[in-house]
Image 1 (cartoon, helix red, strand yellow):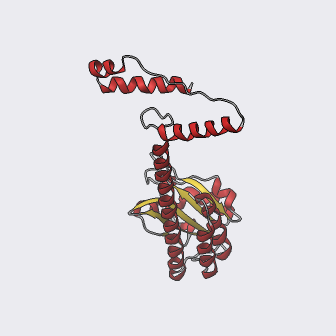
Image 2 (cartoon, helix red, strand yellow):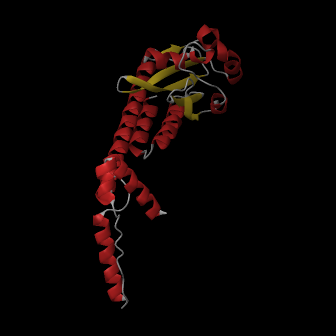
Image 3 (spheres, helix red, strand yellow):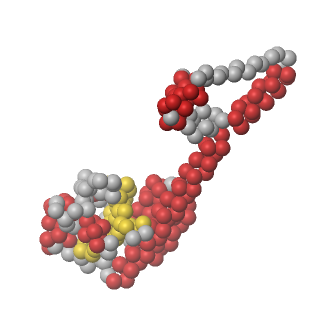
Length: 248
């Protein structure tokens, strides 16, 4: 399992997207820990059931056909996944087929050879955003030492997800800054800075090709009157509509 932990950390370093991270982590953990499956499931806004984003192992197809909920009001939410998500703590079930919490999955687990399982919450700050689920073909697989290792592995994944979120937020902010620097915020049309660049380019192309270019100036007659009589909100609406028609 130490090998799996090392491989997971390497996956965190190599991953360029959340999807790649999920896939590499599940692959590393299922091989290193010899689990029948390793699964990552995330919560969706206003949804009762978790969304499986990655699963690996010999029983991966069986896991894909199951559903895990976050609420204990439904059977799918009373197992280790729902419990760890709600409590924000690991949930260990070392005798899967005799535990009432997993009763909903006993038939499927019996057919797939699942005898024990452990679920760990993926955290973002103080909130659970998903779970990392490990299933084993042996009873009592999840010893205290193994649980500690898996908790470290899960914490590393949570840290990586937060980094992805921070990077994504920074990219969105940079894109927004770039957009505001080159476009009018109200109409979404290219602003004067972009106009000057395009005009300069057009003049250079015209000179190089010994041809001419022209600038068309469009004025809105009576715009001040609209602002003064109907208010700036009406004037803004007019500019937005004019911008839409110019783009069309």
